[in-house]
View (cartoon, rainbow, N blue to C red):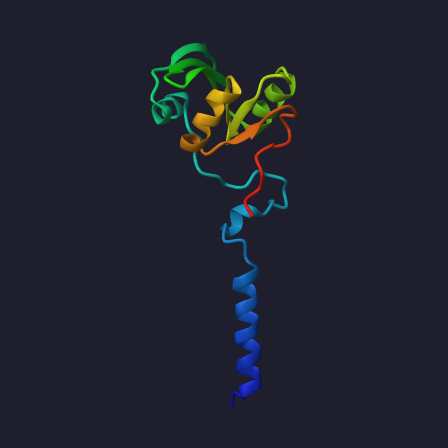
Length: 141
């Protein structure tokens, strides 16, 4: 026979679990073996370029990195895509700190700040102004 206190405790526990979950599923957790969690397929140079309305002019076409030059009404910029996040991080550590970047999963866009501010919305990227390892975009409140 189930008692009211048991039902109330179960309902409270279920509510706490639902309320405390991040909503992101298991992808928010790090695997015990250190492997990267499954993430959506990152955008290609062509997909990024299409989102902002430019025709990419390929500059680097390698297995690990691809770079294209783009020009829109907002201005000129470079789109970079990387095979892994580690490659992107290594590239960003070597990038000049005075150049702002727009950053997303396995991609960066390098250009003048005024251009990146226009591209930020369509690309849903984080704006990195000086230290490329730390997003300068304010966190949503």
